[in-house]
Length: 240
Ligand SMILES: NC(=O)c1ccc[n+]([C@@H]2O[C@H](COP(=O)([O-])OP(=O)(O)OC[C@H]3O[C@@H](n4cnc5c(N)ncnc54)[C@H](OP(=O)(O)O)[C@@H]3O)[C@@H](O)[C@H]2O)c1
Image (cartoon, rainbow, N blue to C red; front, side, top):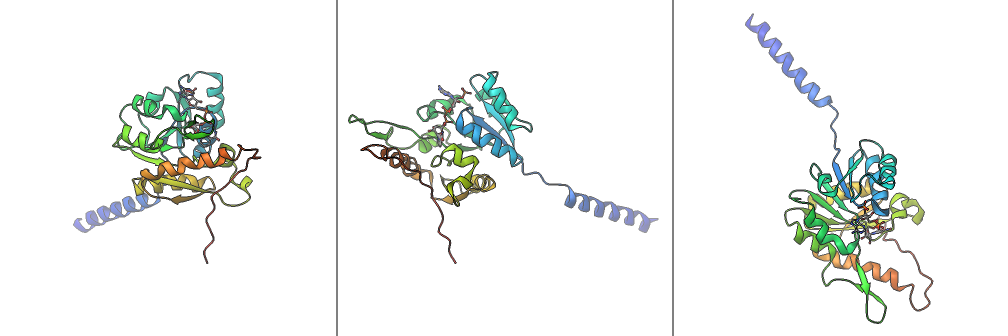
């Protein structure tokens, strides 16, 4: 009887281990995307396609354009207010005007422990009309200071939204520079970028965000002095 009992316990244990081994493991994250414009409309559906749950944070979640974006995103996507959208989120994307990142970050409540993806750019006009960086630091650093216990990763600011949804249009691999203080957070964002068909390159801590954001000035200035404009893509060099 004792051996029969032991056998049942052992079998039960084996069944438990076996079922744990075969339960499909979900890596789905809940991603709040603040804003519903071009960048939100590119990243939201891409992240949803990777199996993540998307919540849009909009000033007007009932607007027809927001409803259309939710429908296009599919899956479990829905829209609500910005502060509601971040409540259960693992990752928050600030797809908002660059001038507003500090105010919007502060308005979202406690973001401790969350990854914040910052794709923003922010420039203004110099007195001679040429574009210039609007601040002396960077939006990445401003967001990190506004949410000190969150893990800010600057990403996706160096490519336009069309390339985000169609990396092949660049005629070859496109690399996305990542800067942030958390190696783990950058690995999570790298996985998202690579899932979209982009490469990710780690350029160091968040203090380098100002250099990544400054790349926009290179692009805009090409349109001055009679320039015809150009597109650029960062691309890893193949190493044998
Ligand atoms: N467009 C690109 O190809 C591209 C590429 C890389 C980086 N970026 C940068 O990414 C950020 C977002 O760009 P985007 O092109 O997606 O901008 P956008 O089309 O203008 O969308 C910005 C979104 O921010 C939300 N928002 C919140 N407060 C706002 C306010 N006071 N005024 C206006 N909008 C407000 C709006 O969503 P609700 O109305 O739903 O609240 C709006 O849809 C910018 O910093 C931009 O420089 C853009």
